[in-house]
Amino acid sequence: MHQRLGTFAGHLDNVGRKLEQSVKAYNDTIGSLESRVLPNVRNIEALGADSGKTLTKPKSIDITARELKLIADDLKPDPAEKTSADKEDSDEIRPN
Image 1 (tube, rainbow, N blue to C red):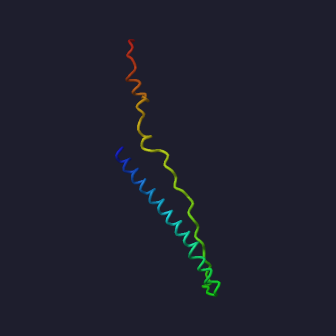
Image 2: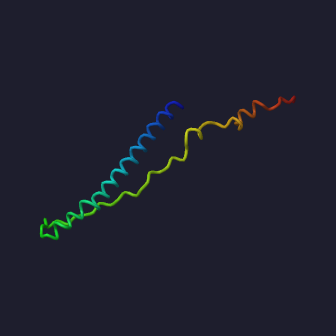
Image 3: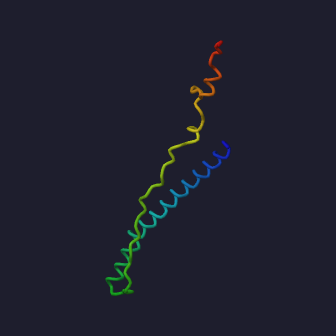
């Protein structure tokens, strides 16, 4: 089970990194649209060329993925803590 959890965590980390890269690439594209493409479109429209369509401006993605609060190390029992079964095993045997 521990090995499966490790594999899953690796896959999850990979998805997180790719998601971050995708959002960055999307935001870079929006920045390019705003700074390079749209000003040229406005200049062309000012010269009289117009398709009659309204250009909609895509929004920047500002949502961040939820951070994983529970990590694999949290799943390992603390050796300093004893479970109730361990405590029962370590109790002294008392005569009746």
